[in-house]
Amino acid sequence: MDDMNMKAKRYILPVVSGAAALSCTADVDEKPNIILIVADDLGYADVGCYGQELIETPCIDGLASLGMRFTQHYSGTAVSAPSRSSLMTGMHTGNTPIRDNVEFQPEGQQPLFGEIVTMADMLGDAGYVTGAFGKWGLGAAGSEGDPNSRGFDEFFGYICQRQSHRYFPEHLWHNGEKVVINPSGEPAVNYSCDAIHKKAIEFIEDNKSKPFFMFYPCVLPHAELLMPEGELMNKYRGRFEETPFGGTGAGSEYGSPDFNVACYCPQPEPRATFAAMVNQLDEYVGDIVKCLERNGLADNTIIIFTSDNGPHEEGGADPAFFKSNGGLRGIKRDLYEGGIRVPFVVRWPGKVAEGCESDMVSAFWDIMPTLAEIGGAELPENADGLSLVPVLTGNADAQKEHDYLYWEFHAENGKQAVRKGDWKAVKLNVKSPDKTIVELYDLASDQYERNNVAAEHPDIVKQMTALMDEAHHDNEVFTL
Image (cartoon, rainbow, N blue to C red; front, side, top):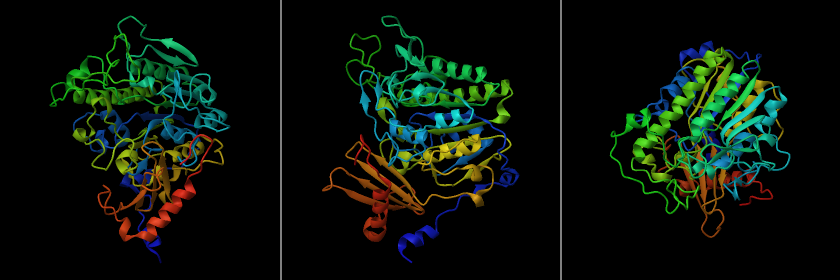
């Protein structure tokens, strides 16, 4: 038996920890409401239930205590647009339409193209009312990637992720129409996240009598680092030694004549501000739970909480100080664990036992098949993922496993990564063959990816690179 197969024998099978798992039930006949919350650039350990010690996140921690916390869940890739494309289409980044953050002017990104079926299309066809509130980044208003063209009955928020760099924007978008929230020439007083959150709560209230799917891609805690003055800023102000951030050049100041939406603002208290932003995200989650309880919806609503990629260091953010990646190697834009392993919490009363933990190796492209089974929807044939319903409902022995997981990242000269069992291979400088290197890590003994063992296992490196070639398929826009 070769090294690869021997290693596969040591693959940790999906398990549910805790005696409470015995009370799980696989009854999914009733169509539940679905809320999918995706934070922006939130690290694996930026919340308390994953080890954060400096920032308070009682509401997210509460979801984990009443549901299941996954310890080996991965995002679509290491930056926003392709990760979200993977999430929305159920495909890994070797297949999903969007593979990089590609800017379109004046406002938008490369649109989802072709006849791709999105998660919202799928659930809408199954009888769900669908809404998205937050950051889109998969096509400008009026394009084929417009959220209202990709299955969402209602959208409110940033259509363009470049615009979402700023938290006091002139406008947001509602169903293809600009909504001015901070008129030009007047003091910017309306915080975008508050406006978006209000619309999300209204969506729940307005659709409480029918099954709904709410996608909540909250911008927090993405740079810039900025919070309104108030209780949360006062809570963290003075707790940390600060190194002021000076902004990203001309146009970074609000109110300046050369204001640039793509810049990050100056911030004299970046650590306190970041902590307050994560705490604010937590309070939004708590507010959603309270809204469900107030309307008698909590027992028939599944809530999923995750993040689109690893932590960032733009705008004065300091992931090393907060230990945002939990000691894992890498941050946003890296295909090391710290760039792609993310928090993943599922609360589903009566179906997922309280206080469960799973080491199931899973990824963003598993969410669409999971919701298809839960919602009684037809899953597109080209989906790459697996339904997680068995492990969620205490039937881990019936849970199918991935042969391998695959990621690619098109910036920084191209990167690819594969995880098979406990083996993890990372390929760098893909677009420059004379500079390409492949690193190999044994996550069973080296989850922090400190010891590259490629030289000791050339046969495994060969097999892993073959899997990369198998998983990647060029499309008309993105090639490697």
